Every structure is written in structure tokens, then in C-alpha cells.
Length: 402
Image 1: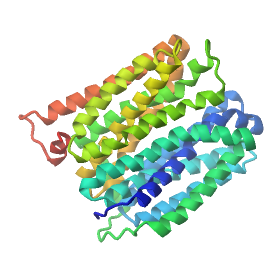
Image 2 (image 1 turned 135 degrees about the horizontal axis):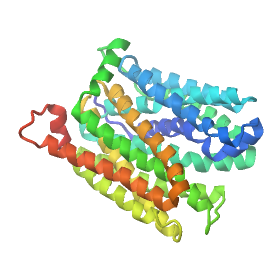
Image 3 (image 1 turned 180 degrees about the vertical axis):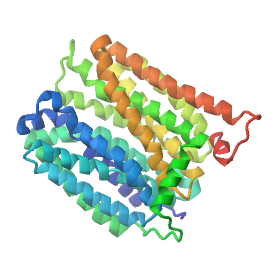
Image 4 (image 1 turned 135 degrees about the vertical axis):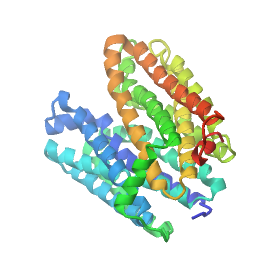
């Protein structure tokens, strides 16, 4: 489509991503309140978080490809309103199953994040695509990390239901702004849902897509290892921190992630592969500092900043490369790529607590570093394959060397 996206539209895109993705993560700091209010046993509280994640995973495969079929402005608005309906249902739930249904619905339509990223990429001039993606995906990180801080503060004053009320109001407001501010999606070519799903399946036979997807899988497994497990050593001896100060570590993550917004400009300049490799080295090295949680909180803060910088830099580079390679089906390629993200995040979240129980935070840190090392190996292997003169290369592989 090729437009110059100004600051106002970039900010709106980022806000949509931040608020939508927050609907999945705001439950984490208020689980105890929810359990007490609705009578959910501690052993079953994990399902409250899992409901949103399961809905999100289903939406990636079933809903995001719709962006390659219909007007994405209307699709974004509709999904924001449906996410708001899920949040409103959760806010008014008096039974656990109603809450789970609301969170499942909110998670399902929160994939508006990927439709938004894809639309921002499609609207961008080629020379500005990386810059715009860096700004828009910063909103995702703000939503993931900032949701913990904001939800904890709201719940402390007005209770956990106020968190979902605030979300619903913000989502409806953003839906109105999207309809008023964004240009209509005027593509002449339209495809059927079956064709879109077939196209999505075809991506999983492409070497470039698989390599970048595997990098994302291990990248977010490392990310999930940190953010699903960090509260455990901070709440234990010698620190014994409460929920509020633990949540403030999310601010350190925000500093790192926002600092990586410039990665999009580097990608625009043709340094996608170099940014990926360098950031993955930083990711692995960050665990040397994060692993020192038993005796230095400052080292943990430094490690968190570096880790989130690295994760965001790789994430932006991956999406820049894939959307440049498939400019005619940005929704499908972003949705398919994010399936790897979801699976990696789930792997990190489920393994870090198990490892911590057996080997402490040192074991979890080794796990996070191992995931980072696996991502680095995939990157190095994909580089070697892409430059092997014995193998035929199509345009996606050539792009991967940029």
C-alpha cells in the first residue's frame, strides 16, 4: 500500500497492541484475589492464565489470516470490541467457569495484535517498514510487562474486577479511534478463507519461515523462563520481596525493550541478520547477570534490561524480514510466526518452575541460557545454509542474508 505513517498512527497502532495483549497477562498479579473471591483452589489458579493463552493460540491460526481477506481496519475494530466483551464478562463473573469463558474469549480476539502489526507493515513504505514495526511492536512489550504493574496497582485500590473494567473501557475507546483515524483497507485482491489457510500451511514448508520461527520459539522460551520464574527467587531468602516490588522489575524490562525500538531502523538499513546474531549473543550473556539473583538485585536489573533489549531486537528483525518477503500476505505470515512465539512462551513458563523446584534459580538461569544458545545455533545454521553455493536459493533465502 505504501504510506508514510506519522507519529499519531504509530502511537495508535502501539496502543492497540499494548491494551489487547494486556488482556492476556493482567490476571497474573491478581490470581490470589480472584481465587479468594471466586473460591478457586490454589492448584487450579493456573487455568485462569491458561484460558487466555489457549484462546490466543487458537486465534493465531483461525482469525489472524482473515486479515488477508477483508478490510483490516474493520477487522481490528471488530476484534477490539469482542475482546472488550470478553473482558467485561470476566469483570462481572460470579462463577469460575464464567470467568474462564470471558478470558478465553478475550484471548481469542486479542490476536488483533497480529492483525495490527500486519496492517502497519502493509501500510508502510518499504524504507520505513522496520522503523514502524519497531515502534508498533514496542506496544506489545509495554502491554506484556506494563500489565503486571498496572493491574497490581488497580487491584490494590479497587479490587481485581476493576482491572477488567478498565481494559474493557480502553478497548472500546481504541475501537472508535481505529475507525476514525486509520485509512480503509482498499486492496483489490481478495481470497477465500480456504485459500488463506492453504497459504498459511504453505509457509511451514519455507526454509526462511521455519528458521525465523524456530529462532522465535527459543527466543520466547528464554523470555518466558525469566518472566514466569523471576518472582520465585525474589520472594525467597534473602530478599523476601512482596508482590508490588517484584512487579517493578517489569519496568526494567520496559527500558530494555523500548531501547530496542531502533532495531527496526537497523533492519531498514539492511542489517537484519547482523542484528539477530548480535542480539542473540546478548540474550545468552544476560543470563550471567540474571543468575546472580541470590546476592545482587542490581545485576538482575541489568540482566533484565539486556534480555528484553535482545528479545525485542530479534522480534522486530524477524517480523521485518518475513513481511518484506511476503508483502502480499502479511497477516498470514505474522500469524504463523506468532504460533512459534506462543509455543516458546508456554515452554519457558512451564519448564522454569519445574527446574526451579529441583535446581533453584541457578538451574532456571542455565535453562534460559540454553534456550538462547539454541536460538543462536538456529541462526548460525540458517546463515550457513543461505550462503552455501551448492544449494539453490529463492528470494526468501536471499533476503535472509541481508
